[in-house]
Length: 305
Image: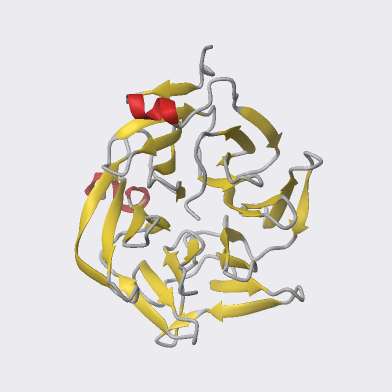
């Protein structure tokens, strides 16, 4: 039985992660820049952003329909769920990290660091200790396309940790434009993509970096290492599966890296991919946000947690 021709195996380990009779499905088109997907198990829906159109959309697995979840949406980008199942959002135009509580009210969690406005939070994740980690590049203030053009008050693009008590700490300050981020399954490593090539060219290789997380989960220890360098476009958003493989966006589709940093396979998508998410009730369905559209396929692996 042949694999879908869009699946490219580069290392035999990839054969164990893909399903031979599963195909790449094109679910929907109509976005300007589809991004920031998060799967909500309680409603069997995928929430994702259409940043330039200032709207958040939802795909319903039960009906196959896409409709508007929120509009306007503060040019929302990344989303994740906290430990209580509430949606946490990185907002470009809002220049904040916010949460939609169970009562439907939007609550601002972080919007300033040392009394200076954040740039435009981009991607966001929640750790098992309920801390929220997010990247804050300038894409939402670089122009009026994905937010409101403005000067950076902070003067740099950083990664932050928001403690449950509201304390905001700067964690990474040596990246040009930190973007997608995720933890390894045991949360001992933080992976962060740098898309600074958009601002400084080849001086900033399109890498995913690996940072060691301290035992108490509140700090990063030692110097970072380069986990992988993108060979087609840039790495933007990505996810980690239960075995530590990284499934990441790229210019020619989705790239899969084993936990040793080896590129073991690709899923070719006919649009530039911005981000991915594991969904489905078994968390084995990979959703792909790619420029104007939403794609998916089933895998022989599942989300890390």
